[in-house]
Image (tube, rainbow, N blue to C red):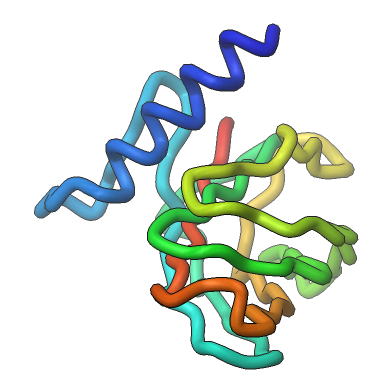
Length: 134
């Protein structure tokens, strides 16, 4: 299982770091929902997903290019309901979250908001990328 997660993290790092020109980026059943380059302070960012991406049962967050202290993530679904997902974790560049199961089965995602800080732990701005699995 650990080797599978390490391989997944490596593949996600390659995808995030590559210069793809298509919006529809996938590895197997995982689809890139969006990315944000974070700032050097306590902040929050929103990744707009939208119905055109489809419905998902699982999420995974990958952090590249820099370090990041993630506090929480809120997933807002197409029907307006929200899931508050605590992610209190210090990410080193190239690391990722556990697989996050979404409650309620396949769900359309409107947007994903995450709160973080860098506390000067990184000289480079981190990029947070969220992947979804159907």
